[in-house]
Length: 446
Ligand code: UGA
Image: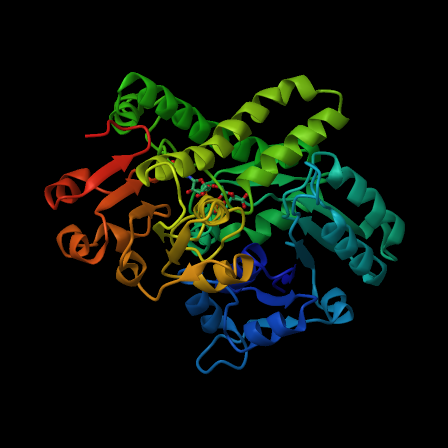
């Protein structure tokens, strides 16, 4: 009989994983402690914007017409324990308030609630991003609490999905990494991932600490790559160079590669910033803090980008934001997402507002979340509305919609045609041709 799967925590990671497991043919039960989320998902609706996810969910959620019926959601832990042969733990691990370390309370609570209910053989698989050493600790906790004893085993299976590509990354991952303590656990995971493994996806079997570290190392590397090119942007600005050209030229070297070399306002979101901080905190606890002191620099280069964008904007406004109208294009931390967690765009908008500027924000999908975080900013219903009467326009999240804007038409709408590209994805030529003063981070002024 096919394995039955549960997914605990139905945020970006869990909701996508649950739908993907149903797509692979498994019977799946998702659990969340938030009743409203469970009701929404059970009706085939997704509580966030993630391209393709709602379609995949509706293809499988029981009760939706024409669905496979393989996917259900619940708030009931007994039902989950009873149902599952494999339990995926997908709850979030945010940054602790006022500290670098990561908050493990949701993961700990999930294990503590599930384990005492596990009275038959099963595999609990952690997918959340955790500090190295957590899996070993949680395995001990599981053994202590589960009536099934050693028959209830733990594995760690980090997730590398990107928001905006969550469905694609989950259905067709570039690698599957598992941290296991037994051959039995490896065998179960090979069965779960039989379809991607058959189509050639690399399968890396490691011990717990290595599997946990793969995830944090990958995000630390990505963050470092972005901060590297942003450091080059600082040098380019000082020396009169063009960081976009520089990135293109070094990117042809396939040891370096073109990806993640886009300079601009830097990285944000719910993962890279908090993961590098949690990594440093954990290294400190392990007595290996020196190994990761460079991440402090990666973090400060990144945070400097936001401050630099505010400076560029202030300079363009005649050294004061007082009485100036600032249009901000973008609120999400990246395009194809409505996620505004630690968003550089919103952070810049907020700083300018606090310095007295009248800021109007437009984002294709992130408005509702942005309003919740920054209710005091003004929000417009379209890019053109945001730009009306603006003294300066800041392009801070690179939605495709913004690349399609008509510079000629917009020059008539603003009070002063002045734009700063904080993502280096707009083509300066048509903007300048339409009479705009166009600046971009790390590129020559004209
Ligand atoms: C990141 C990783 O890319 C995923 O592999 C990982 O699974 C995920 O974190 C996680 O830990 O859950 P994500 O946060 O969705 O995914 O976003 P990214 O695509 O990595 O972008 C992060 C930030 O870097 C965004 O603010 C983006 O605008 C910025 N960025 C990206 C740049 O500034 N320049 C670039 O060249 C690329």
